[in-house]
Amino acid sequence: MSSTVSAEAVNAVDNLLGFLPLIPFLGVLGIVGLFLGKKPEAQGGAGWFAAIVASLSFVTALNLFNHLLQIPGGALICNAWTWFEVGSLKVNFAFKLDHLNGVMALVVTGVGSLIHFYAIGYMAHDDSRARFFCYLNLFLSAMLLLILGDNLLVMFVGWEGVGLCSYLLIGFWYREMPNAIAGQKAFVVNRIGDAGFILGMFTLVGATGTLSFSGMESGILGMSPRTIEIAAALLFVGAVGKSAQLPLFVWLPDAMAGPTPVSALIHAATMVTAGLYMVTRMHFLYEIAPITMSAISVVGGLTAFLAATIALTQNDIKKVLAYSTVSQLGYMFLALGAGAFSNGIYHVVTHAFFKACLFMASGAVIYA
Image 1 (spheres, rainbow, N blue to C red):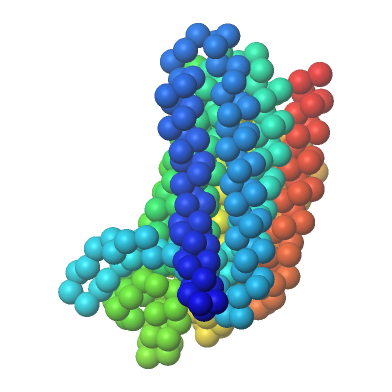
Image 2: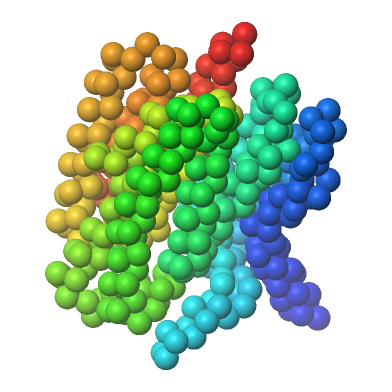
């Protein structure tokens, strides 16, 4: 009897995992239905609605992480449905929660919730609050999809989702031309990196016949060293674009054109850490690709030095923080290239909090 109850409990937790990325997406639908298109004075509740939804995501992630710590295997898996089958290739729309993305989920939803509450006051006098909070919730949903996906294709859907949301958020005040240009620049530069990500996926699926992380980890041993290096390098190109490394870091400082809550959200805990998370998730590939690992260290070190040097000459408060972010990301990639994956993720967590605080403090100064 107890084993039956236990199995039912585990199944309920797995279903809750599948529901986690859906919570902020339901928030988007709620904002669209209740607030979007209404007069500015009728949009006041959109911020509170979005913030409560984000907080609910954090509570759900916390509950799941608590269950995760009690499981001997240390992983929760939810196979939502079979996405498609092509020959021997079968791709499930599946989610997996382990200690790595469990920490990431807590950071994304926790810091994201705080930024939502901050944005209520910051955007209080904006006529398009409902649209703004709709984008924020959509961003949270895409980021959760990215980090919880159990295969590269589900991760890529979230990867493209955060790219789209960053374009919408950076160019939120699109009537001012510099803001619109900054959003377009972020979108185009990220597409350059995404081309590498797609080619890396094609290389891996051609060599291993699967896109799931567990399947690739076992199938990768049959790949030639040259193919391993090519796949690792191509995926790293995607990480360079998303995490603003040399030479594709040019979009990040211009992204300061967006509202300050967007700067805090994108540059602190979420979008810019996606590349780091992907490299860490694919650690089994990078550990046997020494040339690419060396390249990651070199790119990270050069980015850290160059961005910090540029920051010395800036006199705009948010530009200084933007180049500081690029520099810190360089340090993180330097750690990953040296094989210190846990140290890199630890820096991601600490950076999420102190950089979000710095951006929100700068926003308070600008607002005042």
